[in-house]
Length: 391
Image 1 (cartoon, one colour):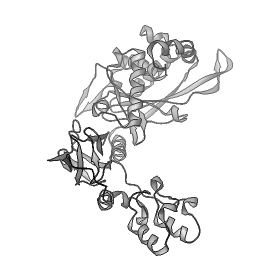
Image 2 (cartoon, helix red, strand yellow):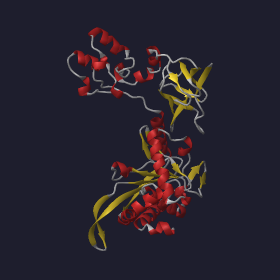
Image 3 (cartoon, helix red, strand yellow):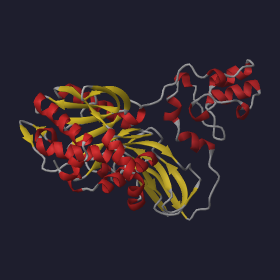
Image 4 (cartoon, one colour):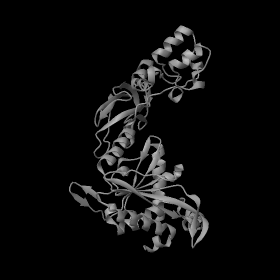
């Protein structure tokens, strides 16, 4: 019996995906629930599992193909004896990957079928591609590697001069949304700085106890999330959005936290942060980070959000102007903590300082409100008891 492999439902408002990677080739055996193919959407990657055991009998959608929800990807023959993967079938799933490298240089990885140019040179020169260091993506042996080997050198040692890699759907969507924000919003950024001394001391005093009790590290993001909740409650326009000719005010705080993943930046959302504890926030953020790295983010994790916090400091950023995540109206950027000389009570002292940046849509948020928002966040971080007392 033949079982079809089709594109599953991908989430609200997502109707199309790109075939990113086949884990199996025609003729290979599969077990029920084993991942067969990875699909990439505008927001997340989705693994399509086998619905039953058998053998891959057909692959219809090749890597790089755009497919709609419900489209046929391939087929499984149930109960068929496993067969050795046919080289031709393996190649049939990889034309898009071969096109991503300049001058048709990319070949398949060692152990799989090489690109035609590599096979031709192997036949002409007698050089075994398996003995040639690959300079292509993932260690692929390229035409340039074969020519260099024939000339007595190694292209891998020099490195490729150019490489063209097709943009992922996520990267393209990020580019579109960021440009949309710049084109649509009247966006500008205001800055402040915060003395992190009190927060660093509090964290040092309670870090071990907190981790022992809750099973998660006490980070800075939970404090900034809670401080933002206080500031958003006082300045509701920062938590609002423009919808047509109306302003939609949100009486809840769903805060997006920008997380770096191998495929690009994702912004999962902490729901109802005003009702979350510090431990809840830290546990959820830790889970987001793990699933982002593993490519396991769900569509519902990334939808919605009334405000965003971006932590460029984890990468060493001293100061930046973050871009609004539409349709939100503001984003808070937090940065690297750096010891600087500051004046306190007419004395010059060294304190751990951090720059804060609030990018906002001037169509809905006035400068006074933006500056006041940052001041309230600053007050809460410099005196963390304010957060506990909601002051």
